[in-house]
Every structure is written in structure tokens, then in C-alpha cells.
Length: 115
Image (cartoon, rainbow, N blue to C red; front, side, top):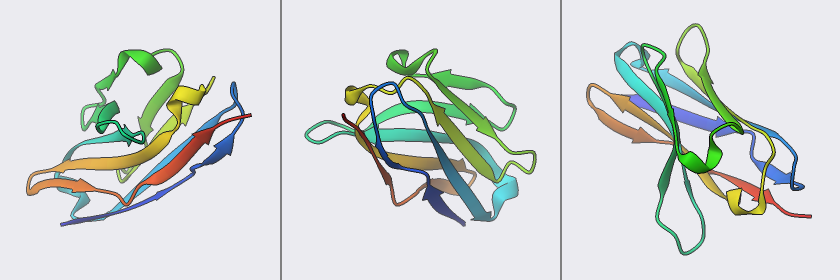
């Protein structure tokens, strides 16, 4: 099993930056991929970015060139660096881990982009 703790959300002005972190504990050596999803009010949860154990990354089109996902050397923490934030990036951001035993979700962290 895997436990996830997220941090780094908050209120930022348009054009600003935030860095989200998701620390995994437990059976981290069987994690295949880690990613970030977001859910805005009244919308479905969507994939923002994902990184595999081999380092392959994918991004949703709307964040390409602005967001960057990375993992630490121990592969137990995943980061989402968010630059040039826009009001439409406002959402609850969730960390998700794909483990051999299944998928695990973090509790979510609010990101609000507003002037």
C-alpha cells in the first residue's frame, strides 16, 4: 500500500508560479507511475501530467510549456512546477500513484489563480 501527502497549493495571481509536492510512503518500490490530476468546479477530473518510473512524461495540451513534472532520485516524491498560471488553472489538484496493487489518490490541494 501507498500513502500520499500533498502540499504546495494556494492563491496566486495570473502569471505567477506554484510548486506542488506529493510525498509517497509505504511500498514505494512498486510504483509504476506518478501523476497530477485536477478538478475544477462542475467539471470532470482530468490528467494534468504524469511521469513513469522510467522518466517518461506526458502533459495535457493546455499546460504544455508552462508546467513541468519531476520526481526525486528516490522516486518517492513527485513535483509539479506550475508557471505562467492562468485563471483557468484554478482547481483542486490531486496526486495519483499507479502501483502494482492498484491506484492511490492524494487528498487534493486547492490552487486558485486570481487577481
